[in-house]
Image (cartoon, rainbow, N blue to C red):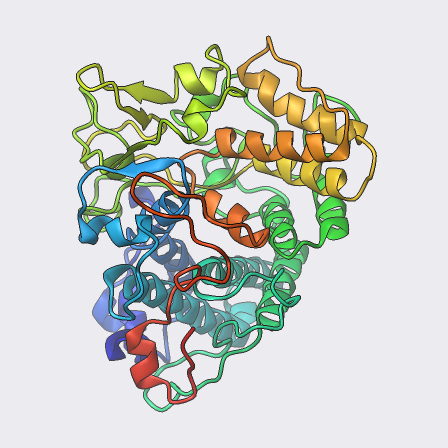
Length: 488
């Protein structure tokens, strides 16, 4: 990682206290007056530090664009239209083998930069928060910082480490940095195992669940700031990636207690599916959106050039995106199991009438591309639970079948999914995941956690779990600065 990122000097607090998650949340703190010693001395400065964690997670090189894009284009459902290495052509072709490539370096750098900000905030709030804002609010803030740190580590694992299923987490994971770097001399750190990193992620999310508020002050904040159910929802994703299906069931049942539809959370934020999925991508603060990142036109508060989701996935009359990736006719869009009447096909897919190519239509706002990038939705919790139930019951589990039908029939009431065997039910759930989360960055996660071969697409051959490039190399900057680091 670059020195200016790895060696975070204390003066970086001058910058982060002025960063906002949304323009109207900007805190008027004279930046030149904030130092390492005083950055947590007032309620406003503490809040500014917490907001900066969200701002850096939603950077264009991370969750505001590139991380989600990479998670989709590694799979088989997209075709590259431009061959532009700057916009991920090497990621699509499953060939970012150089440790110095933009994708490998920039995603690593932004995630670890944000992790370090989390560590700075955790240490600052622990030391001064109880006196400045009180114990309860301090714990709320610590919960947010640890949740974001967990999200960062989880995201890094999906690209830079072997899946948990390969050796039950025994393979090399990531440097597990849990203390703040405020100056040089802290770069050397060996890789923890995959299992050790996952254990820290779960520890952070358990702390977050215990200490975050049940709800926030508004629907917008319930979508864009963490609360208890945010931590629970993310745990269902993490445990699914570990193949720990009993714990997926334990966590998901907190948000989906019903045996039959309609399904909804009954405590904290009352999450539920929206009647029309298209609403989720135009009204961002519905109860289906468990965590999304807000965008505004203010400088630095949107993804920036060549990063936004709409730039990659869509070009139509109102959105002059670059249309970097069209939908593969041989991918999920061509699957016979996805009916023509499905709202996800009629409303969330755009067809270019000139060349008949199809594009994801979830991110439709024009430049500067202010669509809220989704992190996790309630429909994912339903399908995570459905899959865990299906994989832990040798017969066709009734609740699992009801859950997958709830997601399907929300968008296509004419279809009732049936399954005669456990295998058929699992296949139906996996198909539903590809349809429901198309363009939301989950395909890579699903392939990796199951140690599946990444299917061929266009001119790109399939890549087996044993092939070079199944996971990414470690950033060249990390390798040069960390003498204890080993490459993949």
